[in-house]
Image (cartoon, rainbow, N blue to C red):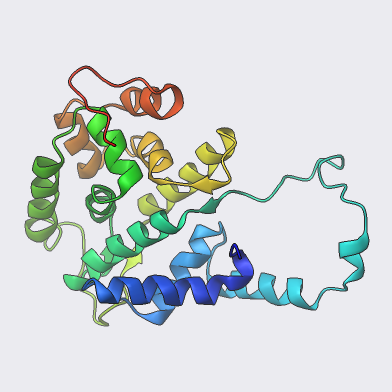
Length: 231
């Protein structure tokens, strides 16, 4: 059975267990908050309230004719794919492992290098993934401590920065524009460049990857000269 937002707790538990098996531990509350973001709501409390409201609503609404499109009501936003949920959890895990209070775009991009869809886009745009991973890891380990990220006092409580959340929201919008039912790493790479002043984006620019390159591949299947089409 395909899961929807009513299975949010189970999805959070599944992702948390998967990450634990692979050495990236996160807290229960952190996994719930991330799943809430994946469904496009502000926080877990908001999503929980929506779930309660849906479960307790009168069953008569299910028998009523569907008029949402005719009435001009916006359809539900695309969901985050299971793989992308795991990627986002992995980004949080990178920050948690270093006791960072915030999870930045650099943590996110590092996680995306191991996301099948996002890495495929980067390879098609002629990005050297190994070099990018090393550059990001060096930056996270050596620069964020003093410049960007404060050391968290509670292990496992890293929170996404505003820039991180903006990228997530833009990815949802891009997937919606593409007519997708799920948001994937492809969408993340297209919209990532909107945060053009971030060190993460500067590292993509240093490898001559641009937003146009990403969009050309994701939206039209055009591979940049020198890039590769990963299987």
